[in-house]
Length: 160
Figure 1 (cartoon, rainbow, N blue to C red):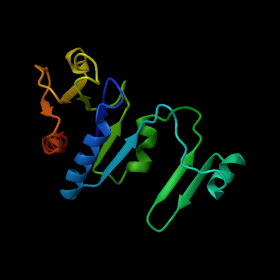
Figure 2: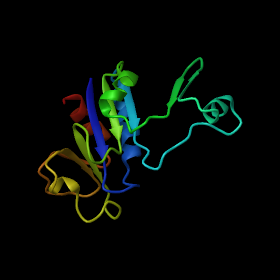
Figure 3: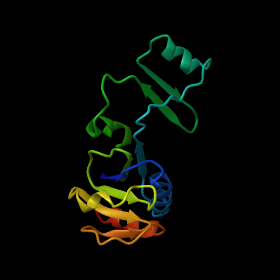
Figure 4: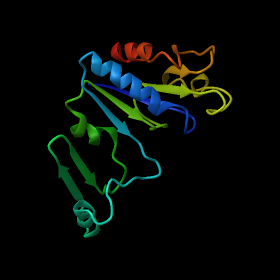
């Protein structure tokens, strides 16, 4: 299983849009793809009044929803789980894409959008970043991909 992390200096850099395109390309190649999204401000899948919401409100530590075409697991972790702890959820994937884990993770690819992401890419000063996807050209110490070339990004990931 390959793991790659898309990061950016700020929100609205285009990570999600790029990941959508890359996932479609990798799926078209017959690969199984999992995405782990970091929601720094938290999230809630439940709606008040639904059974799963009622179970969590009652204090359940884990609620599993099972439908004909999907499964959702909602857990109350004591601490934010490490990548290794999430592995069982994505073990059937060929490629795992992580979004938003800015400070850690393997194979970090920076997404940089001019006017949104700051003055210069993080990769110019961070040797742990392995590639740059940007809307403007930069003389970067890592491979740089054009903002609109998701196929090249997918090729790069497939060769890791």
